[in-house]
Length: 212
Image (cartoon, rainbow, N blue to C red; front, side, top):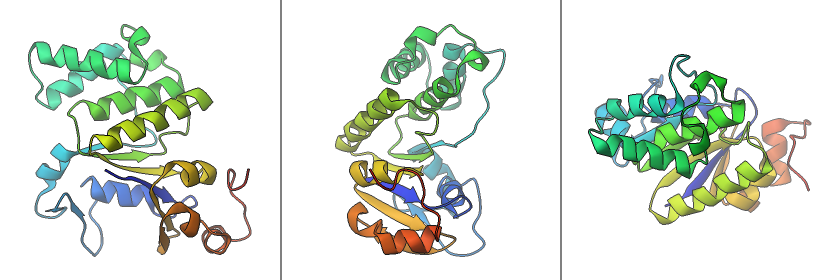
């Protein structure tokens, strides 16, 4: 039930951390747990609980949008009429139902981002790991997604999102973690994203979105 942000410059370790939590990458040392499951001993259980959307991902050229979702729904073992119904529901949630019969490779970058979000929601995950989910979205789509964040939070889901926009993080996240290869600070956005901590993470470079 928390909306949690990973903040830091490129190469800080945000994507690496998410890939470790999604059991797609083994750490060189240390331990991590997802819903009390160890990444070392219970990767299958974790994958059932997690929906992971990377920043960049491919789509199958010869599949329509609805076929793309049904393919992954089948991988999640969603069967029969429930599969099509679930896919249609996800398209409506991400406002992509008007593209259901378009080929996936004809979508814009922002539409592809929304398709990826629909995909990770198919199996009703408890934890969402979203790597730069706002990177290709326009202002309206960004606000729509933030509204969805709050809806999923009230449903008891946990959301971890890596973002670059510090203003967005300050106003939209419950907690944030500031990284630069190691932990700089973590906590509520107002305190964590202080001028001193931002300086420690970014140096003299002022990232976009830090001030209104």
